[in-house]
Length: 486
Image (cartoon, rainbow, N blue to C red; front, side):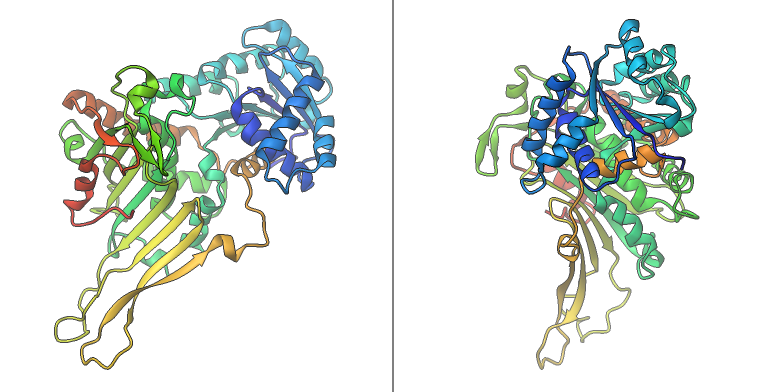
């Protein structure tokens, strides 16, 4: 890590993500005195706005999106004072020249560029920066997902940025990696002696990863249709969680060591074929139903036309390496689910032989570890205990060891994921960002599923909103003698 960047240059500053997440995160970092001295935020968008007009918009966003007890007029004023606005459109050399004038005398203090724009603008924006002389060894660039829509387009995006920036200057954002509970997976695995020795095919029967959303399209019609749940959620969020669960222990907690091990796990994912997608995958699309007691319309109704885009996907994945051979990873994500939740379930194998009672004991169940990432944050271990009583046969019951991270750290504010990511970008710590070979390993596996679906003619099955996908998603796991943890 080097000295932190003194300038944060945000493209797409008038967009929803900037207002909901990025500026509230910058506000919180400023309030906690975590931003560098002489810090300047240059906000850029296509709209023609003055500095004060944009600052007024951000103040409204802070009042709307910050927690009620977090907004402080004095801190908001301090933030206003370090924000300037510069309209810039990709391909407009005059506007990039004006941007360079804003940055005059600041390049040697470091610039962190954040692209909160469509991926089609990543390379043109970077080219504009280069032509304006704004790329130096102390310039870093961060890109929001998606990085392409398949392996070929991903390489095209990465090639465009890689032609102008060295890999160590490029920070690919997956905001899930900024969540405390996702980072806590590393601490859980590698900071506790009782887990790592059992974290393999010898002791684990299967793993489940669920990322459920209750929302529908929510204004993302133009982006989502033709992309679908597999590309939108599995390729990034779900596979990043899987890689942390499945990776080998890194030699140390640094960006290269951690990401090296994640890449190895992702490259070990068994590709799917036109035959295996029939038994190892489920596509779904929500129809009208009820979520949270509210009647909602179907995907096609929201879209205004029929579509073959999946809003739900369930997968049975295998990682072909020494640690995980034969252990199925069941992955599912979807929209219009009954509840909003992100959860990991580690199902351990049963004890090899029961010593309890003439009939092998009553109620003996294998242990289960549940890690809830959102909306609650907890770690729950289900273990067996003797039920009190005088029966000669031991009667066992499942009891829960429950650690609520929210309660355990009640005195500490739960931070927005982007606070961690922005802070790491400013100081150049890439541990929680995605490396190019990670992205390409993810797309390689996702492309095998998409190609399999096309060859086998797999279409989305309907499911009523408010349910956990089509019935075939239940069969996907239950034919193996397991059940989804709903």
